[in-house]
Image (cartoon, rainbow, N blue to C red):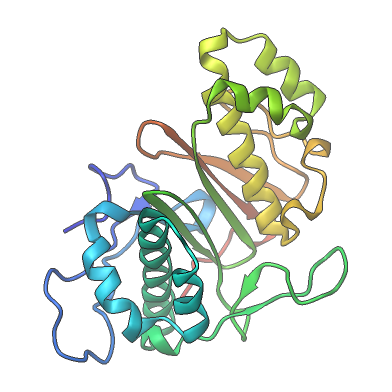
Length: 255
């Protein structure tokens, strides 16, 4: 049973969870072979509704105590379910690449490029595989690559959000949105924002940097900061998503 909402575009892989819970498995079954993303990145789109029950039942066997505690902090059941599906899925993907049980995957935080403190992007201890995770209610997006990578998935916002968030856009992006029919602006804004977030997450600085300083474009073809490649990712209607990969690491596929 696929976690994709429908037949996946070429950039997406499939992530499977078993329908029934066997007694105390040593590890969850690995995902099937994923499809390629931009120049060697690999992506999985996880639909919460398809496997909420299985992920919830497996979470105590797969996630670490801090992840389980974080899940309990979500007040809305839908947010909690999406978090569990995202993190169970991430551990399964990383465990499959590393050849270890998902529950034994060890993750840490890289130093922040802005201040040097350990709250940068999430990393694996040996640094041989890079990954990124993003989720909104109902959907999660996972990426792995041979070098720094960032992903973001967001719902298309209400029109009022564009007014409230105007200061996050580069002046050229603001002009591009203003030139569009008002009905097209929310989806275009989501396209811009996911591109920006993917780049910032790949850099490991998140919103510690001013998102308005980099131009990623509101048009069909994304622009990218120097040294990075950015691509839009096909996701279900009502959402937009993007992935950013550092150019110097495109040559190799993750192991």
